[in-house]
Length: 213
View 1 (tube, one colour):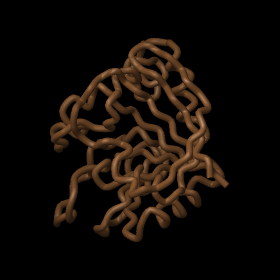
View 2 (cartoon, rainbow, N blue to C red):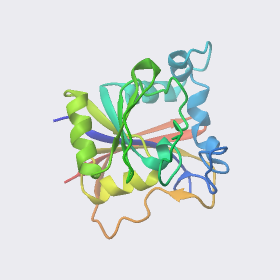
View 3 (cartoon, rainbow, N blue to C red):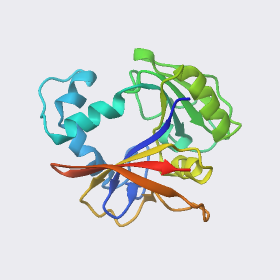
View 4 (cartoon, rainbow, N blue to C red):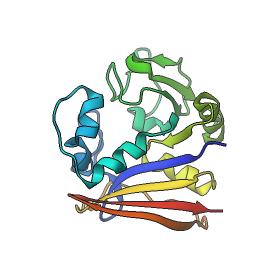
């Protein structure tokens, strides 16, 4: 069976997004700092249509994070916004050509027709919980892995449910002080992790863990 992988950048004090997330500032105040390590890499720039970029110790980590992925799941806030969709629903943060290039299953309380975007990304909105979203994602992935693309709340739900197989964290040396903390709200879940990799790179430390059942 395909693995369910969590792959997120976090601050040194454990936040996956800064405070006061909004349509204008989807990662919250200071949240863009969490991804600067990747944005300058040639391995990130080339798939997004940009030339140039760096090659460093993060290159292999980033390339590996994109390998063998067939589908993704995310929370409603990660897609964009909150609450009911309304009569003219917003298409989220990701624009006409989202970076996923695969089926994405959005866990939400509000029904909505699937949203087909350029580049192979289709957002399917799942209203019957995280296990249903994972089941649909695994079917769509056809044997490849499934990524939990965020945000913190949906990651916590999969961790509490014991459904995650692997956690990959990219720890950036900034202190956000507030926002969406990744490992809050675990409800006393007993989570055992086995370290499988540590990579030091410019502006980030990459950590990988296997979730021990």
